[in-house]
Image (cartoon, rainbow, N blue to C red; front, side, top):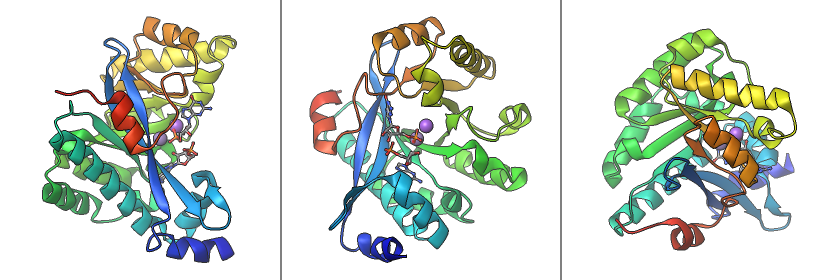
Length: 253
Ligand code: G
Ligand code: G
Ligand code: MN
Ligand code: NA
């Protein structure tokens, strides 16, 4: 309860900030995207992990204003970098269930993107499999978001509640293979089979596929062999501050 009260004031006290982690296109080795990851600098507790406060934010409803802040901040940053003349990349933002189920989500995002002048094709929304449990609602929401022109990714793919039926029918663009499969891909032949099968399935379904949690060259080699499109992980970079991301990863057009 104490943490919830602190969370309530965290926005106005400007205690949140974003880190960015690069997404690399394997065929070209180019940085084509970045995932925005939320951090909370608590005045007494120090850095609090989203794993610890997102569930509280979700339950209390605070996730809606916090999620809007994340989306606005990440998209504004992306637009600023485009204006500065860097080669455009896509920004991925994690949505929580409550945010995803908001009736006017697409309208709100569309209005905001229009105001800042960011093309929706440079925005990727990450949802998880479990958010599509209510199939009809999820389908309608995804359809509106796709009409807006943003990109939709399924995060932590393979760990949640999914069915091949929904993969066939939901308007989505990309699967992000959960890092638990990628982590042991060289040691565990079951994981190798899973990564290989998800990648192959993505190709057949004309979906893009991104591997998460890539930590070494061997994993990268394996993913290249499988023709995985993109990768993300500590091998390239941990999530870092915007200034650092700009300095290390952004290239002029
Ligand atoms: O960055 P880290 O590995 O600590 O993230 C832990 C979890 O928090 C991940 O599952 C990640 O998807 C989630 N997360 C990070 N940033 C956000 C955010 O802005 N919104 C939501 N809903 N989840 C986030
Ligand atoms: O659930 P989601 O995929 O959004 O979580 C992303 C989080 O995973 C990031 O916030 C980051 O902290 C963590 N992460 C990113 N790359 C790696 C990696 O290579 N290894 C591990 N163990 N964690 C990673
Ligand atoms: Mn994610
Ligand atoms: Na993930």
